[in-house]
Length: 250
Length: 256
Image (cartoon, rainbow over all chains, first blue to last red; front, side, top):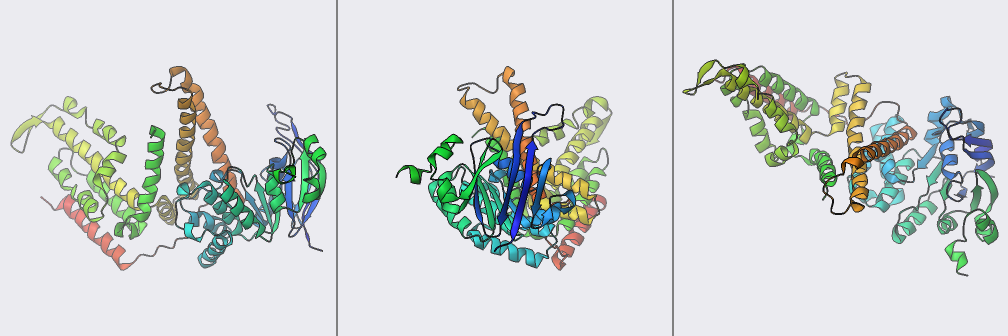
């Protein structure tokens, strides 16, 4: 059996907890699950269900309040953050918020340089990452001249340069046209790592994931094979979702 | 094209120009920085009334604009906000210093002479700095600053401010587009909308800047940019340094 890479126990999170102006809104409660190497997990739920919050907690962008998280055997603690982050890749929903260097190859080289790889190895990793998503032709291009689809692929390539064991993506298919969306599905399916994709694009999840976690009001209400959960009209509708188009046509 | 679009495109084009600028772009950034600083000091050290001497110092930017194939018109266009401020430098001089002096056979107020010299010094220094920026990327400049032991906090702040400017402009563009679509035919922004618009622009740009910073943190950023470039001083860099240093010193002290 493949190794457990992610372990979440009784996770809870409240926005603004402990701050005078905080909303006190409970975004997550009692989340427990594990994920193994190579799994392809879809994190689905209506807007505000807690998908993005969960992803942010997994990469340490939000502080842990309740429960425990361990990534690749390391408990989520401040001292472990650099190591955890080097084994996790997080793709933001908005690629413009992820890419910040002037050119694609500089952006890709950012992480390996920070992790102290030699320039030769950095360049090698940059090349491999570009090849993995098929953007070798964009190496010297200015980020601001890329299309939305190209930016998304570049954003994925940026995280591949550290060879992460876990890839987290927040709404990866958002704002992509059908051709770029298809290409993204091909790229994602070609990545061997454990992947957790947060989305409410259920057709996209159906094409890329074999396990689904359904979140509703900050709780996991279903965890199981994607083809079973995404076919369950009653369950989906009860949690603010609809059947994927490919099932609703039948 | 809106003013925000134009400003954003101009801002980005500075970076693009710096990356493609020919032989001048390949000169070691440290050498270019040294020559630029030497030039600025030489220009500023010209005498208070030494208009002729200051005019002679124009040879450096003139030659570099031509040989470096840096478009002068483009420079004037990009510096159009700064140049009027430079012109203001000497505007009071003629009123403060009224002693008559003879210059090129014409009797004039010495204040006019010093005012012109002051304005010219400002212009030449700005053009000198522009030549550096137009042919050197911000990353290369910051790498050199670190080599000169400028504190990493300061260098990082320079880089982040530079990146933040782009974000501010792009958020400004979005806010402006949203506003103009709902205020058709209106010239400029209504006085009542200025506060919310500027507030929105700042809040949104700060949110985006925060997400970018998170993206940097997730990729191992720990307070110092690493450009990865290893600039080595080559023969041509040394020739450039020695040649221009010599020429600048000669223009300043020996060209009469």
